[in-house]
Image (tube, rainbow, N blue to C red):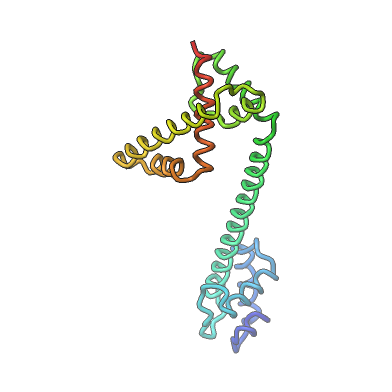
Length: 209
């Protein structure tokens, strides 16, 4: 038996012992091919598996199980890691596709018309919505009539609200709200997106009632 020889076992199993080992492998490790079993012991010999390779001249079922169980555990972790990486890649592709689609006039128009229809049917604003896409549609279609100065004043009012919300979040220990409002106050890109979204939301409030 080449595996036992590779491991340095002086006496290979006799025919009866070999038959018993083969039956044991079929019953308990039938999912592993001969190549996989040989590879498992090769990994054990090269310290690629977290298992003791000392066999004490006894190539028995207990020793075989120790190596093959470690190999199967290793394989499961590899499969899980591969699966996790594949899922992460799929999410990133979907997110990239969504971000690209979100910048198209068609998508922004759908968002605008979607909230108009929602208000007509429910008489209120949706709790969560893509207000920024609505703003971009409004801006493109000339629906924003406020002057530059009026828009700047609105932005400043949003900053004041964010400052007050930040203070309240700290008192309440609301980590998410604290982090978000800090970003609004300290990151120009976040502030720009936030005040524009709030502007669009205020715009639609006039359709209620």
